[in-house]
Amino acid sequence: MERVIEPSVALVTGAASGIGRATAHRLAEAGYVVAVIDIDGRGAEAVARTVDGRAFTADVADTEAVTQVVHEIETRLGPIGLAISNAGVYDEVPLGSVTDEHWQRMLRVHLGGAFNVCRAVVPPMRRRSTGSIVLVSSELALAGSPRASAYVAAKAALLGLGRSLARELAPTIRVNVVAPGPVDTPLLLDRERTPQAIGTIPMGRLGRPEEIGEAIVHLAIAQFTTGAVYSPNGGTVIQ
Amino acid sequence: MNDAAPVALVTGAAGGLGRAIVAALETDRMSVAGGTHHGGAFAADLSDPGQARDLIERVVARYGRLDVLVVNHAAMTMAPIDEHPVDDWWRVVDTNLSGAFYLAQAAAPHLARAAGAIVFISSEWGVTGWPEASAYAASKAGIIGLTKALALELAPDVRVNAVAPGIIDTPQLEVDAAAAGLSLEEMKATYAAETPLRRIATPGEIAATVSFLASPGASFYTGQVLRPNGGVTTAS
Image (cartoon, rainbow over all chains, first blue to last red; front, side):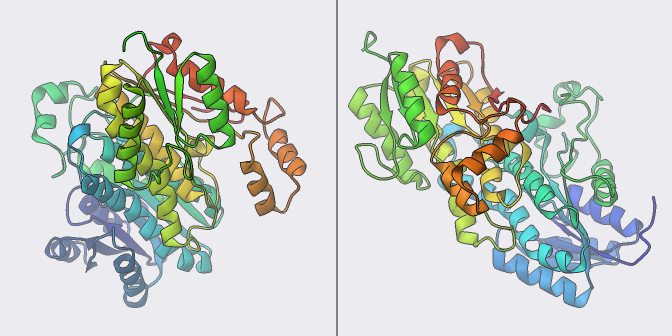
């Protein structure tokens, strides 16, 4: 992998596990100083140690907390060149059982988390006339999924946010979306690990977090790519 | 009750597109309850889950059934992402997307009994994004996800589809024109010039797509997004 020429800071939310952790590792390999953000502060510390980065504890749904963390990163680590909004939660709930709290939490974590990160990083990126943002959505946002209406709606809303910001912030800041398919992370349900479930994936296996991290970093540094939605999904959605 | 006319609830019924949808469904011999933000028997603030649920129950109490839900209401603001007041941003998302969800959730059991249909109004901007319209575009893109998720979950009892219209000749255009510092005619000409069909849509044209998706003629459509947009975007 190409290394960045200038040391640059990359922030990753939801970086204590799964895709976020793999992305933090890939970014460190590529030469970035990584700000590891997670609601699980101890998990973030553990990842930060392995990538020689720095851990920050925040709930991405909290606008003030995200603003504060971005300010701290800029002050303590330096200018943020890349922002990866990845934090998410997954839960299957039939429509009739979705509580108002569940709906709101899904929307605030996924869409709100991305909104909060973008709001905080855009002004400094704009001042420096450079920056790149990647929002992590889901393959389920492209094709839908039963018993996941709140999750799918929130992840689909990210497509609209990402595409709008790509138009709004060009040519200064690039904004792209990665929509991963079934990946072997802590969010994956046991049901999705069965041989029958894996048999429905054309590639015949689950994705590895490292593969998604690779895709995220590729999009983050692809200089002619903005407003793209890239879905490494093992062929589960072929459009 | 079986021989009574089918019943539709259309939200945002006082707006330019809403009135056309009500007229189209009435032409199709449906009884239509017009949901509004202010005034009338079916007024509600749909960003509030309690009011959304109450609206569905009021319609069912009044008509005895619900066959079609058309979620057409919308809030709209435009501002750069980092200048957008946070409360306004969420008001747009919660009105458009959360409101759509609350209504669909409350309506689903009634619609299932009637083998009914939901038609969500998304937007071309929900498909393509639009600068300084991040809240609106996110809400309308979220509605497309909601359409697909609910189509899979509520099948085979309820069909769920969406319409993502291009620019429509409605009073909302005056707001766009004022924001762009143009006259209404200049605004229409600008949008028309960007559209292969060289004009903007009439509300009736969009309402025709909505009433089609609500009708028995669309009985094999579910989870789909129809895009009457004059060809402004041909990519899927």
